[in-house]
Amino acid sequence: MFDTSRRKLLGAVGLGALASLAGCGGDSDGDQTPGARASQSTPEPASEPDVDSVAADPTDVPDPIERDHSETIEVTLTVEEVTAEVEPGVTVDYMTFDGQVPGPMLRVRQGDTVEFTLENAPENATLHNVDFHAVYGTGGGAVATTAAPGEENAMRFQARYPGAFIYHCAVPNMDYHISTGMFGMILVEPPEGLPEVDQEFYLGQHELYTSHDAGTPGHHSFDYEAMRAEEPTYVLLNGEKFAYAADNHGPMEVDVGDTARVYMVSGGPNLTSSFHPIGNVWSEAWPNGSVTTTPDEFVQTMSVPPGSCFVGTLDFEVPSRVKLVDHALTRVTRKGCLAEIDATGEEDESIYDPDFDGSTHEGPLYD
Image (cartoon, rainbow, N blue to C red):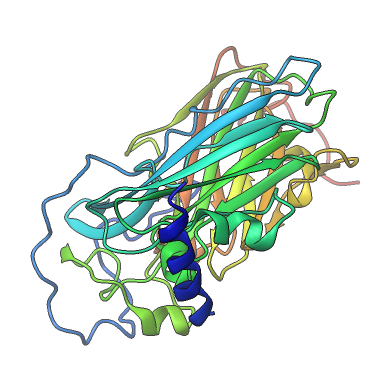
């Protein structure tokens, strides 16, 4: 498709080679420690958002694959450049796949053939493409899929190896494109599938570099120098500050007794996440999205580097609110990296008794 424009594009591309954490108060009133951006001029007034939100719904996960054979799967992603709020009163310009951050989760079976098309909407301003880490081939398909505004390009690939893999835009300014939202996950299930769970959730972490401190009202432009210094304004799960916390679009919900699988893709472009559930533990944890290996068990915190994925399960044995965070905790309290899961159901005081007053205890606490 579009062979002539593709040859021109390849030549061009080749030349550019919460507020609250476990009950402790945060910076919800906007009081911030002065930073490098504090001396800059007042931002422009907040822009009118193009969309209500870019935060991907974490429950929008494709169904597990139950077939016992390979198929040809057609996938189309559309690049949408939009303006939206990163927090109330603060707008930024995002670049997205299908208008959401992270981009849609894709799910195929090992051995499937994927016919993939990237559409670059005509109102966009720049070139875009996709690099799939699940692809054998030049640039993970980035060269083949590069498209100018108003055009599209396509490729076909076979999903040869299983696991959870990132996909992302990979034009020369790829760090900028990823920072503003252009990343997602493709899950390649092994032929035997994955263990059955009650719930599945999908999250994506990335950092956003803007011209003013977090919480400064108005429209923030992108700050390339802050990105060069790797000093983000925001560190986000699903594109907004505290996107799926209870006070925003969340929380996610489960029942006591459920097991939930969490898929997390780290877009970066620079920071490694220390992914941790407060009030729970990863019962099973697959580092780097390697779902065919023996999982780690009962792990508190998992390191998820940029350009990688994590798959982990949580067991919910008592009613609770579990906070999913980056345990580099300044990223939570000051930069917005938090999502929440509420487990509802019958209490079991033999496991956890928040009202225990010590009246039944006899003898020394420790012998």
